[in-house]
Image 1 (cartoon, one colour):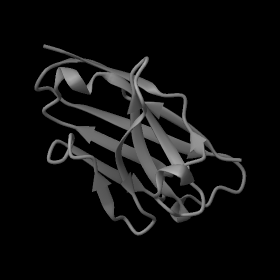
Image 2: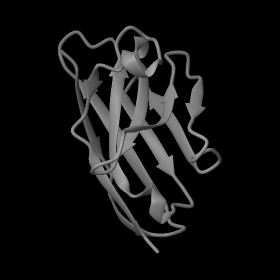
Image 3: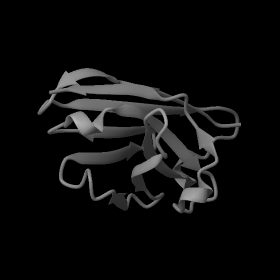
Image 4: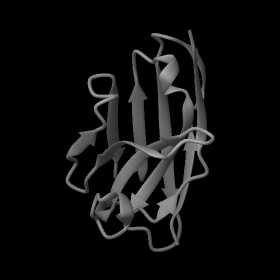
Length: 123
């Protein structure tokens, strides 16, 4: 069973940076095989995909964060990162990491989720 725990959220002024981390643990975790992703959601809003990284290290981003956010994974540490630069107030959300254990990065493949970490950007 895979468990994901996010950390690194907080409050920052517009233009600032934050780095989120997501640590995977559990029995039988074969982290290197998973597609990993970051998602975000505000109360009353639909969940939005921020970006994904395949088991080969290929990344994909939502248009709203391209050029500002960077996803990276460290398979040895079983940890996923989200470096967020040039933050905007509209980036304020709860951020979740997720794992697709079958290795595919389609949104419906993500079946394991962390508890989320709050990011608040003030103007």
